[in-house]
Image (cartoon, rainbow, N blue to C red; front, side, top):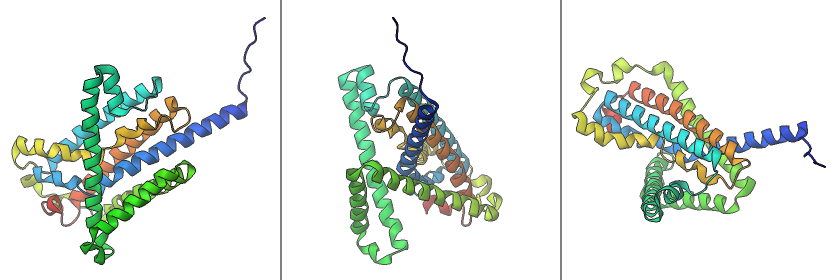
Length: 269
């Protein structure tokens, strides 16, 4: 006698879909909080190569990150894996190559966090001038808050991160939409004189700076063990996040070069 398993009830299916949607939304929020800071500062340094040169660099870098997220989403849908680039390199190339990739990835995130905190220390004094002489105060407070939330974990972390993501992306959207009535790319874009500056060598120097728009989004597959149905939620969260970042990157780039003072002042702002 063969016993067939009972089919899932409608309530179970609905509950599963809601949990997947919630997990995907939370993953989107993690990606936003990790990456969106790069669209607040540092990205403009690449404009020293010219508006067209840096626009192409942004397009190429965005395409590369989008394709990478497609590949990682496909891998996560088949084999949810928390090892990140180190784990994938170790499984495919072997231990020593994986070790090298892991070291490079660690250095990347250490430098990314360092640059983010230094930039934060420069931004905070615009609201509280007294911190200008004590930048380590803002660094320490930010680091302690982040560590406490990670230690608490659970719903506290997810809700805090969601609020932070919505506020962060909301500020970018308000900046873009609120600036549209005042943009004038012909007046502030610098014209043909600033399309390309320094030729191909300057373009190659500016190319890595375009990564500020997207760097960090590749880390989402590390959360495979923290979310419901990672085979489904990780790809949805990762692709929705990179799509959002591509849209905001285009908006920030266009508005940035189209507002007063525009080029070349914004390149060194």
